[in-house]
Length: 465
Image (cartoon, rainbow, N blue to C red; front, side, top):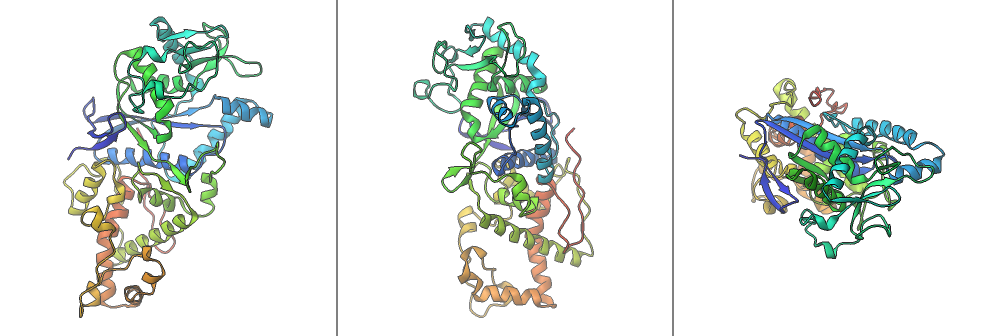
């Protein structure tokens, strides 16, 4: 079965078609390093990590690039507030980010470029756009992209230009309010680099275009990031990159849904964030990863302490089932390297796992039986006179009523029983739980040491080549 993703550009599911045999190139937009990363960033990081691990498990060679924006208006403003240089602030936050990513269990990317290390490539791209008539300089040394010279502008966000808001920069020297900055003329007290138009620094959007093409070429297979980047960031990347090269920038555009708190997006600018470091004080990383994987990556996820606690209980149940299965089997199975783990003939459970992941990375469907509607409906009551062995397990989602139901008491009694019902429960749970946890963890998720109740460790896959 082919691997398909929902392409934001077309709005449809489209197959992943490597432009070189068995090789996939992925660019995932990183963070602007002016403060600690939050749970919304964590979801994007885990989504990219699961994507890359799964492609590697299917036998593909993945070149994964994730950037740092280490020069930006927000960085300059925050550095001035703290009385330090923008470079010192960026360096401090990059170290903190790397600690957060390591805690999440994400493998390091193949390349992790910084914007300030690629100024010459950005200047070359801007000069090419100016020479081709797609960009123009203004008296203060800034350079803007002529949006109306690119007829396809708006194709990613599916908007008409006349319906869009004006660009971020308010500058009376712009030819059109929608034009966006490729290069910003230097202001007093700001970092600057020399350019043909005078001292200045790069605009936000030009950074990713220059770094992506430097490491992956153009076009490449997958460009991704959070859905909040579709407009204007990714829309502007497409415009400047395709105007310069005359070919598509990327084949597939993959975007994860936002983390929300109530009705609002979790955002630094809104002040409603929960940093990754704060989450780490309350739960292990695997609990957060399981919470993310339980909802399709494109669907918005409402984040709360209650959902995090429920994810922790679910993870505990998974490990309990694995521990019972390992006891029955006489020990845990050997660790499976991620590269090529799913390249051979699959078992029935691995075939089900691959079918779900091939279908737009649908980790939330793994382990379910039947269509989604059936999987989400309450279990039917057991027939009269049936054996407890055949009684379905009640869902904790039904709240206090389910916890006080006979099925819940039956579960508790069966866990206490040392006889055949315990072994049957272990075998049944192990088949499903091993599939959802072992397969997803080895092929898609980071596998960190098991909790103390199991006393076993699983090796982590090698980093990206």
